[in-house]
Amino acid sequence: MWPLILFLLIIVSGCEHEELNSSNSQPIQRLSQESLPGKAEYERACATCHDGSLKKAPHRDMIALMTPGSIFSAMTKGVMQTQASNLSDKERQQIAEYLSGGSLGQTVKKIPACQESKGYREGSQIVGSNWGVDLNNTRYISSDIAGLDSTSLGDLAIRWAIAMPGSTRVRSQPAFGGGLVFVGSHSGSVYALDPDTGCAVWEFAASGEVRTSISVSEENKQPMIYFGDVLANVYGVKSDTGELVWKIKADDHPNATITGSPTFYGGNLYIPISSLEVSNAIDPYYECCTFRGSVLAVDGLTGKEVWKTYTIVEKAGVTGKNKIGVDVIGPSGAVVWNSPSIDKNNNQLFVGTGENMSSPATGTSDALIAMDLNTGEINWVFQATENDAWNVSCGLGAEENCPVENGPDFDFGGATIVLDTSAHGPLVIAGQKSGFVHAVKSITGELVWQTRVGRGGIQGGIHFGIAARDETIFVPISDMEDGKSYPDPDRPGMNAVDANTGKIIWSTLHDNRCGGREFCHPGISQVVTVIGDMVLGGAMDGIIRAYAIDNGKILWELDTTKNEYSSITGAMAFGGSFGGAAGPIASDGLLLISSGYGLYNHMPGNLLLALEAREISD
Image (cartoon, rainbow, N blue to C red; front, side, top):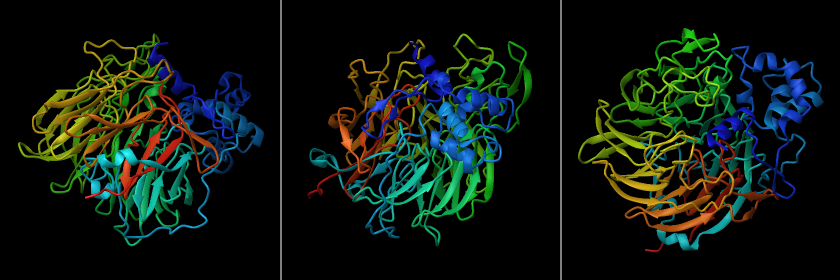
């Protein structure tokens, strides 16, 4: 089957991957949603608003990304309680199961609460206080901080494993702080875990899936953590107790979401805002599209807005008609999928943007943008790909909403890195889904170099991001088949690039070891992390590898799909594709990896794995 069509079917049908059976941990196939009784109840009670007629109601495609429990909770005690008041609990359950494709009655084994724990200890080592490890987003952790290097690899042992409850994907990057591990989940729960045992010190229930990392701050009197959910809610929570301090809606568009992790600096939280409206366009009667990407700065203590800057200045309006006479709305898109990097010396923030979702294309899509930290004013824009207006209706034979540009969909999905180079001074460097890495001057946005590292494609190219140590950039390549034809061959694997020149230093390409497994691919979509003298990257084949930073030699690997892991929950955990922005993270000899990406044509999994290393000898 054409992979792109399968990718779209997964979105539209509510991510119908296999679901966990907690009694024996084996995945079970979800029921066909068309056969579920909730279909009739949804069409009777919900479709009028959520099939696109009511502009302020989340589209059903957005709701389908939630777990059945989250949807049921929204109708019984959440934002949809009033609208669902005339429904019985049975009808609410049927609707939740129809939309999600999962079973609400399925028993989910929870992470056990700690019987004994040292709890939150202010002043303990913080690693991953922001998603990029440091404000520059280099994703570099020294051996001293990590407590491991390449000599530790042969002695890695499992400390604990968790089957993340109710999850088929694990895409919230953990963070260390206060002697605890903080992590979000597919189910919407955010946990503070004891790093020694994995037990839960506390659990917080967000309104939807938490795909972001957890930002940790002890800058204020009250230690706080920050995160966003799939419904575009952003939270400030007490680190020691899990008590909610504030919650805001980052954007009032019904299809807004938080994908990139917020960055905390100087008392403010800088929030990238994206959208899934791009999938709504598959409906030829949908007036596509109205969402504009943005960055929102809020006060870390209160959640009050400091400034908000849209990537497209002009508000969307009617620009014409599509092929069946429905209004075309634009300009739209240029969403911000990635976590902002910060150059505190020059008081700037940097993000990359995605494609436009409707015509006309703008000068700020597929671009790197610099903003003033204090005001949000745009200082410069570097556009890598012009005229990239695209949405999921393009190329499906039902292209009524496809923009006239019909672009290649070459977002900047991964984050920018700020790196001080000996040849050019401070540069902003980012990888694009086109397969190119771009380096521009941080003060002016002037292009210094650009290098093609991968073939490129709808899922990369370079998908969720790069890493750096000193003056070397480490570039993972996905090059997953997406149904399109490209002039260049695919190059799945890991690469090192000189930050001064853009020249490729080494490349380690992956053989295809999938053996015909469904949803398995050899490339690297997930963001990577540099730990000491090695770079760690998890691939879509379920294998995480450690590469020597000087020559790319594979030093160690672990196939998370080969075995099941005994989880502290009592269920069995299993790995899948590595995907999303949940890269490896390490502190004090503990390495955390997140395996499973049951979304967008990738292997599902539910594994959060803690590996411990021996002490590094002198």
